[in-house]
Image 1 (cartoon, rainbow, N blue to C red):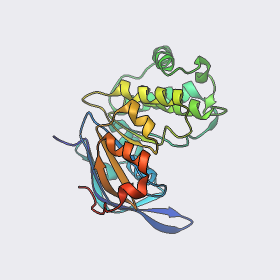
Image 2: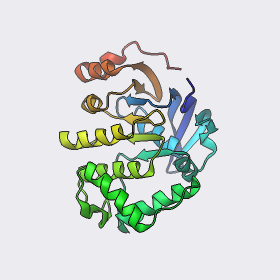
Image 3: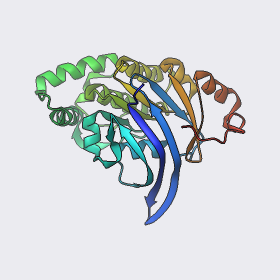
Length: 260
């Protein structure tokens, strides 16, 4: 099966205070169309760095390796080109944008991607009609469209707003960087259902999480464990359950071969 996303021996450094620190130390991972893969691992293992590198964040420097997305060199693209090609990143800590109306922001983002894809832009009426349908499925208050982006939102509201963005942008590949962080059980279910509604033969996702509970709702096709900047172990949902019961130290003991 051809791969939607193929990462081969990826090395990357984070750049902070004019210093470079290596974070990714040879990540290899392949995700075919139509599959949801999960990455788990201890804090500091490189999970979020991987998501930011894939999205094109300029705080990271690629030193070697390659990433192919839909048959194209992802690392050669600007962030907006990656988005237009169908890549979406849901942040662990969504940014607040004071003074920026949520509906206006979402419509601008949707139409920017539609223009890149050669699609007709949505007028205000068509966009609001579409957005309100999605809001209802996510159990969001309708007035959230009138508020400033994420300003005064609870943690659960911010994560729902990320799923709203993802649904409206219609990506073929979504990265969820600990979108479940800080959520109660009900909000966790809503986020998982938002991902599940997008699942199709053309849609794939990379979900970064610490919580096995989310996976009971998502039912991933594959679970990977990341440590020290590498993928060191892979399995099914039983691997996540084992981690939940025994912890990372026991599960990763003896796992020293990076996955290909």
